[in-house]
Length: 40
Image (cartoon, rainbow, N blue to C red; front, side):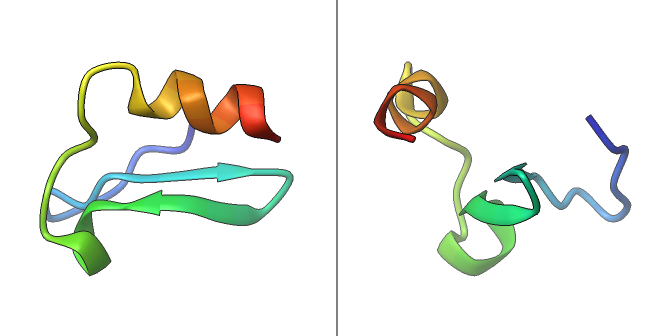
């Protein structure tokens, strides 16, 4: 995990952005991050 600034929440796997609160304008839904990890 790498701390961000300004309330930005971004999640990446091996440098590939998987989720971005900044671009989507929302936090992930329940279990959304786990679903992304399983898919990769």
